[in-house]
Length: 268
Image 1 (cartoon, rainbow, N blue to C red):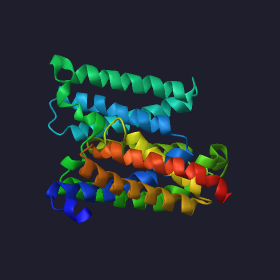
Image 2 (cartoon, helix red, strand yellow):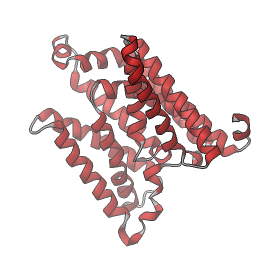
Image 3 (spheres, rainbow, N blue to C red):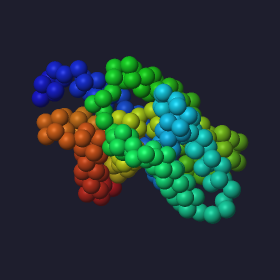
C-alpha cells in the first residue's frame, strides 16, 4: 500500500514531511500538555491569519516571514500579559485569539479575496516541497538540541514555578524561549497542517501518551510514537479514500486517545 502511494513525488514529499512534523509535534506537545498551554497554542495558530494579513498589506512576497515574526511577537506579548495577573489567563488568551483571528479575516477578506487564503484553515501537506521538508528537518534538529539543554528546567517549571524560582531558575527566560520555539514551529508548519487542526496535533498525541506513561521518558517516547503512527496512518488512509490528510491524522490520534482512556485503569 505504501509503495503504491510513494510512486508520486508529491506523496513522497508528504510522507517525508509526516516523518518530520509529527515527531516534532509529539515532542512539543508533552510540554504544552504539562504546562496546560493548550489554549495558548490554539491562540498561536489563529494568530497566523493576522501574520499573513500583515504580510499581504506590506507586500511581502514570503508571508512565512511575516507570520513567523508576528507569531513570536504574539507569543511574547501573551506571556507578558499573563505574568501581570490582571485577569485570568484563559480570558486574556481568548481575547487575543479572537482579536487576531478577526483582524486577519478583515485584512484577508478585503475585496472578497479570502478564498485565496482559505486553504490555510485546513492545510495541504500534499503541497509541501522537498526543500521545505529539509527546512523542517533542520528545525527538528534544532528542537532536539533545545530539548537536551532546556528540558529539565522546563519540566521543573511545569511542576512548580515557585520551586523553580527558589532553585534559581529564570522562569521568565525559559517560558519565553519555549514560547518563541513553539510560535516559530506553529507558523512554519501551519500552511501544511491547517489552523483548525494544528492544536489537535500538538495536544492529542501527548494527552494519549500521558494516559499510558508512568515516567517522563515513557511520556516522551509514547507521545512521539503515537504522533508518528497517526501521521503515517492518516496520510495513508487519506490517499486511498481521497480526503484531507491533516483531519484524518487527527481522527486517528483521537481514536488512540480514547483507547488509552480505557487502557489507563488497567495499567494502574
